[in-house]
Image (cartoon, rainbow, N blue to C red; front, side, top):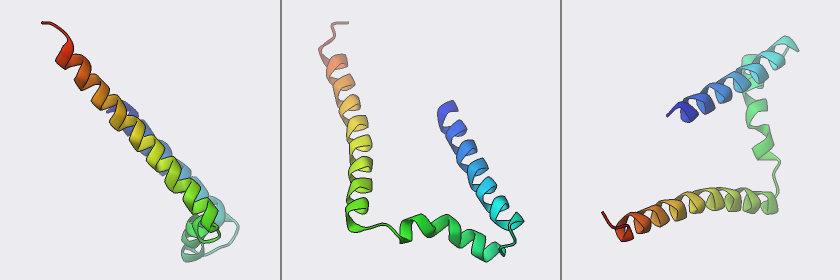
Amino acid sequence: MKIFLALIIVFLLSTLNLLLMDFLLGFSFYDSFLHLLNPFWVMSNAEYIMLAGLFLLVIGQQIFMIIQKKKEQRYRPN
């Protein structure tokens, strides 16, 4: 839970930092918000596939670890 909280705080602080930098450069709030989404608009199909593969790899690893833990608990004598 602590790691999740730290992840959320880092995400919010980095997003706020990007918004404030754009705002200080003279962009409107709307333009600053659009700059946050811009990296996903210029991605090619290959980059979308790589991003999806990365997500599947991370999620698949977590599922594999959960299944492995359940097997160990099942075969461990009490």
